[in-house]
Length: 433
Figure 1 (cartoon, rainbow, N blue to C red):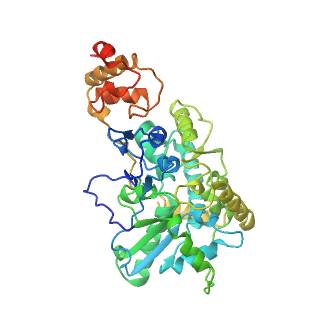
Figure 2: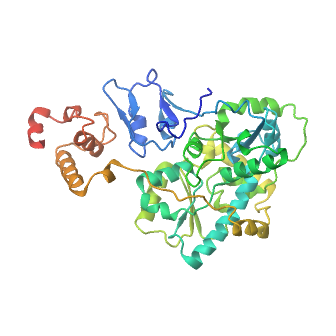
Figure 3: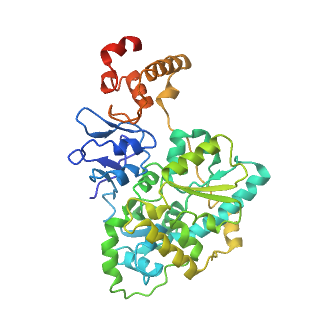
């Protein structure tokens, strides 16, 4: 499916959608959503009513395939005079033991791209940049400890929505995927004597959340990426291209450290500091809450990945995440667990601001922040009063993910008390007025 990306003036869109014809209202997606953005309404169909962070958890748990990720291509991409592809490192784990990273890059180029840029090498450069920022932070105290990796867009979006006090823990550095796109446009525009606007860069992604970075770049004024396509949607074509590779150009340049970025712990494997790697929805939330409480200050850097086992566990991958992890571990051993980038070269770029973000990340505006304190206190009291009469079974039969959210929906006029099958409306409503 090819759809035009929305402009900045159009209404906010999510990169997952629910097919009403397939949905039977089982509430599994509603229960797993970390921002409680999904409800099951009168027609027994799930709908997205709140802030979706595009984590893909609903995609993974839906037994009927009713929740679908949307990966968009801009309508003018295929007509662009210069097309560049930059794949996530997770792609190298999606093929057999005889397929090397360079083979995958050459197979991608055969799909009609003019240039292929290996993101794993830039990831190794990013490791050095993080080490330099941590050193600066010890000297000048720019950010509180621990620093939180800015790489996973879902984690950043979750922090913006649910833990805005942790935004200052994010180092102000552009991510490897954006750096690759920025430098590709800069160099190719100089080479061909053309505007950067006619050079289109597509990212091959393991998850729909990377579309967030294009539509709403966190650290940049505008994204340097123009489009994204899921690994699963081009996997078969890559396999076909692998069978008759003729070109032998060397496109892959990183060591094992850069290749390992696709799995949990891969980013911090290239860091020489006190680090922690956390993956999966529940674990990510648990550790973010600990940081919010002022814990883990002995840790310098935390690598968070919303998908279990990292990007190889993304909803747009093909190979099982544990087999993919084994494949990446094999590649790391084969290419060596050392960085191939030169420290002094990267430090020189860092000192020139090559890695720096263009703007700060801000939290999501919320309904709560729009209300005055007195109104919020009244609202909270009403919610607590309703909760006293609810069974707290957290069943989801009311169409809200849990009893507290149901009480909030009632107070906010989005639901009614008679939706609770355990509540005797006639006998209880009087006490709740």
